[in-house]
Length: 314
Image (cartoon, rainbow, N blue to C red; front, side):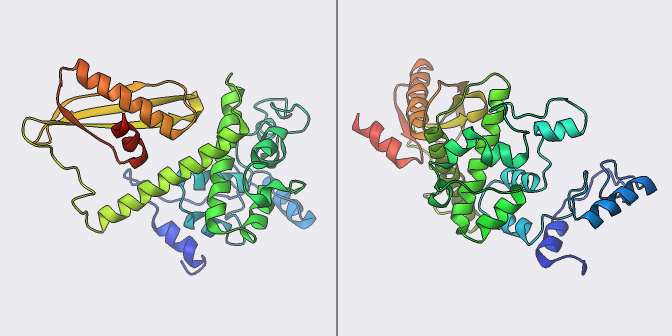
């Protein structure tokens, strides 16, 4: 592992080995199928001499420690991978699909004015700019013309704190999800809604991350589920927002003093505009569910203090 940087070596060592016991084999990095040919090697050599990029290369690593910086951010792993794919120009944009001859039209499906590069879809398109205009101050200035996402990430990593970089990555991921949603017949979200959703998403994830950290370090009685008194039942509920289907969902479970599940349910909810609204609707649905199931006396429990304060005040 001496040939890799320390952070890369640690990441490689964390890769789970295949359960199928597949033998290792050599691949050619710059060819999609991993097969070395003299013809393609000649093409790679010419691209390198011209200072250009190799068409099918993932460039091995992102460069200048960007992957190490991404990996340290407190965001979901799927968004870290999304950021890595964006920096390596391997998101399925229309331009990339046209290069692989999957489609013919490489123009942006949103603005219909420019080829859809990754940096265009996530940064330069008018719809993306409207979202960034309501985000961090450094992004509100506009006029930042970047050759690709790698250059943009390098620029931002040198100028913003890690918590701001987390917002940037989550926001870019939401912009990409909205692009896919609109491509399949959905409607655009208000830019302000996307900005609020990015902050809410990040707060929800990091709160859960902190709770998991406390759980691994030894749970206190306040962190664990506490049984109700005998003959009393406890109702727990949860709400979730689904950006890709423009909807919400909720679940509820009722347990007795032994922790045994009496009944439970999950269902799709209505379109909402913030997580707190989703929580309140989920609470109402959970109470209706408990009453319909025949429970007349029960305790409602949820870790969202603001929502429970509203419910208690009713």
